[in-house]
Image 1: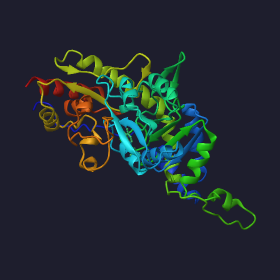
Image 2 (image 1 turned 90 degrees about the vertical axis):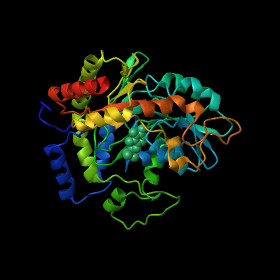
Image 3 (image 1 turned 135 degrees about the vertical axis):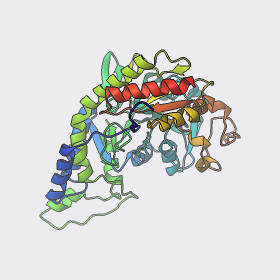
Amino acid sequence: MSEKMQYIPIAKPWMGEPEAEAARRAIMSGWVTQGPEVAAFEQEFAAYVGAKSACAVSNCTTALHLALLAVGVQPGDEVITVSHSYIATANSIRYCGATPVFVDIEPQTYNINPMLIEDVISDHTRAILVVHQMGMPCNLKAILEIAHRYNLPVIEDAACAIGSEILWDGNWEKIGKPHGDIACFSFHPRKVITTGDGGMLTTNNPEWDKQFRLWRQHGMSVPDTVRHGAKQVIFDSYPMLGYNYRMTDIQAAVGREQIKRLPEIVERRRYLAQQYHEKLADVPGLKLPTQPNWTRSNWQSFCVRLTEKYDQVQVMQRMLDAGIATRRGIMCAHRESAYQSEPWSCGVKPKACECEARKCDRLSESEQAQDGSILLPLFHHMTQQEQDYVVKVLKMACQA
Ligand SMILES: *Cc1c(COP(=O)(O)O)cnc(C)c1O
């Protein structure tokens, strides 16, 4: 090969001295979990997305669990969502003892198809859990219209969507305001900003926010901060079953630095996505992601669709041989063994779905998206030269 062998990862967080210094600040302060840094991070995050409140937790999966509990999801309930998502989305429904009811996606945006929702609403439906897949806002206007008609709460899995925007009554608003009832975010390194692991819940409902704060700390009646500052002896009590879903102050201190970088990160990702769009526009049989004109994605992932004439694994292998990491399209939970003998449904009546675990006719767009697309490298410090190399290798891989 004429070019010097290089390795281009799929993603790489942008972190440095400010984050290291922030972690040091938390460590040296002597208060290392759920203290002042967490409180400050929550305020800064809420201000960024425009929410009344934000509650930090250990990751987005635990955030989703608490969001579902808050809106009253119980064993025996059904929650409408997508199979075509990271498995955490569907798993969080199962943690509540409820059944995920999977709806197919729109192939252009990889998001839930609002036209299919009404069809699967039943007497058992308790909530709708939508995903802003790969940072692309889903069609919240259409979804909320249905949800309001059936009086169903909407939870947004915004794990990938920090910094993404949606046109709302003529204004660009951040995902997480929230437009549904509760939005849940992730700070895993594969997302746009990171705290190692971490999650956030935003809501405008003060009762739910209060509830999240109790649940994340075993339902403890007296927060550590209050007990610590008390001049008199106070005992805590545990009036309800809770969890340990705390975020540490070390993570939150890092998150506060990451959120400062966020506008620059989002701008850079949008630029790189634009470049991909321009440079890959003329590859025959390659479909590029569509951004509806009422959305502005943060491009957490850049997903390209291969038409039938290409073999997904072969294209990925060729790119890997050239030192470029890619990933296959987003997974489908219903095709995993963890869902094989477990209850889930695609809405076919009677309630028990008769579909095979690997294949469901009503989820064919989801399955095709998983089998026919690949995610390309995209990260803040990706150079023009690196991106040109990805484009060149992808074009060659698609030719052969
Ligand atoms: C990453 C991801 C999650 C899980 O986030 P964690 O913080 O790792 O728990 C949930 N939903 C979606 C759509 C994701 O991409």
